[in-house]
Image 1 (cartoon, rainbow over the protein chains, first blue to last red):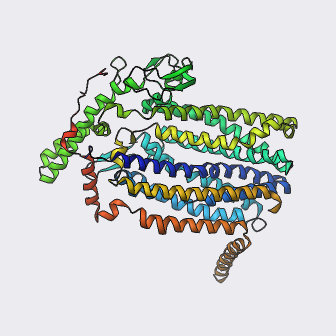
Image 2 (image 1 turned 45 degrees about the vertical axis):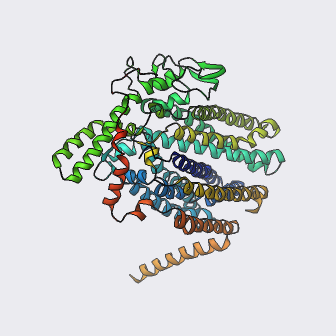
Length: 512
Length: 94
């Protein structure tokens, strides 16, 4: 069965999911983040009674509405794909994600349907206090609606609180708190929401800078910038800290992913973080080529500090994780494969014993399976090197994300400094940079997901289910057709989003 | 009692009018709603219906059949269970 597996189908299904998720993520961070910024603008208006703040709030609300309308339901496509392209996976995780995702969908729908309407229609029709409350509830509701999908993603990276039931072929939840409050899930949620706030602040700064460069709506632009840059600075610092915490979690649970981020083939004591380097795309884990092409610069000890909170600690490289390292007691994927294949064989024997009605043999095989089940996914690998994710893509995405992530707080600080001095409108270089910062934010944000999802390959559920088994047995052509249909649909929607948004930005707040 | 009922009715009427007037006053919102409905139509009436059937739901009628199918997917033929690597085979670098 595995030898007949159409890997082309798996890769097209992965590409389709990546396309859908990246497109969905184009809208989500702006929705999550700008809802908070609008709530702050609205609060200032209610507290001061200044009509300029009202105009400003309504203007950003309108842009929020456009983004929400174009982006709404784009995530549903991923659910379609689960059922069609990833049937085995959907079945196996249904017990863990099904009900909470459905409840969250219903909850978010009612919360948003109620408070969205009040937020948009409520000017002069409900009390100022209730109107403001509704704006805050939209922010809370939007961000809450991201909780369970991020918990689900975190669980796939670190599958805790579950047990596999070979009767039903399902992972069943054993401990809700372990799933919902795993450090992985908390980091995932805080990192996604704080980076979304950062993104939204960049969005406000980009548009406001454009206005300042053209001398239009200058008061609104300056006021928008002060609030957005303050929130953006706080969010960017928080994002750096919880990003560092994510790296620590990854080092503990997905060390292969961390090694791929850093192009670390040989494990090292006092391992350095790559500050500059061009990764060698042709290098394989088993050859002796140099990992980097030409000059590269490492900051000594920083990777060890990130991974283990100690400068002198050992960080395993991809070779250690593939072939094992007895000195550091690291089991390689080669050894895990041997155990995983025992798990698969026991599962098969259990299935046959149950079918044959031999309860005693079934009990024995089940006990064998439980002994090795944590290595189940490795049983489906053909070669230990398959446990290595695409290194060049992981490395480049990680470093793009980190470099941009470090740049953003400096940009926010510069905006705040020159705003404080009252010279922001004269700093054309900064405003020019500011107009493209949202684009940089989109690149950083998308790179973050590439890091998270490409870096965990070949797993759909870490160590338990590779993508090659999670998929449905479809033909490549079927998936190719829908891939290009989505590409066309997404391109049209993106053109609609950008053209409506640009038109409204050109009109500006006067028309509100 | 009568007063309560009339208050409730009045509240419902006010809510209805709130939404009705809000929708009537929309300008840009009308375009956005059109886009939303068109998108939902394409997603559910075209893509979901013709291109994205739920594989297990359409192929099998009971959960036990679905479970059996997935277990079969998880247990490939016996020749795949062997590996040249042993459990404690550290440092087996090619």
